[in-house]
Length: 208
Picture 1 (cartoon, one colour):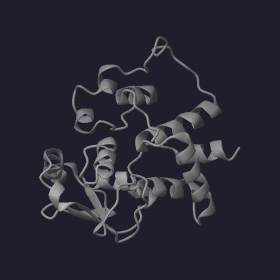
Picture 2 (cartoon, rainbow, N blue to C red):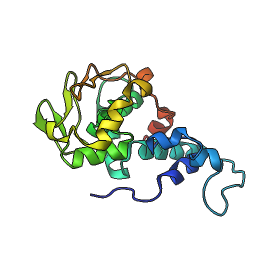
Picture 3 (cartoon, rainbow, N blue to C red):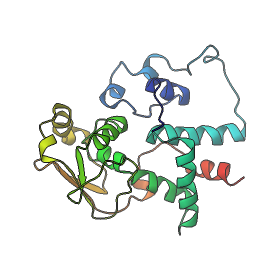
Picture 4 (cartoon, rainbow, N blue to C red):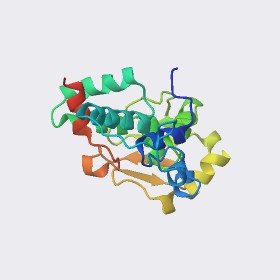
């Protein structure tokens, strides 16, 4: 399965803002964006004037990097969102939020999306009591996402669950830490998705 395997902090520095790709580290002084507030590379500290296309491209790249998907899959989500009723940009972000790896992250089971994806791939997660190991699996309303009983002693999962109250949860999900079980209450609206992305620029890019 193709995926980005390079340093995650470089992605945040490229966008000059935190994408919270490394979990707790992003909230500390060790965060690369805090230490070096300029893009990586030889010419990172030069001031650049972006064209309209460059701005649209950066917003697309930011969304892709945040959710950990590559171009082909991201474009597929755009086509699905474009065919749905409603605002295409909101539909696109909603589809990305409904990915199983993202829901596992939003429930606090994973410290970041990459770790949540690993939990899914390694068979630690069930959906409606059925084993699912596909990170891109789209979660529906009222679906129940749980940690398998045998996996509840996993040190990383236990540590993440213990931090749920401090970290907080989105309004469209609920989590019972005692039973390691969460539920999707409804599909997230745009104002319930905490993502510093101007999705309209992404739609303009793909609409050309």
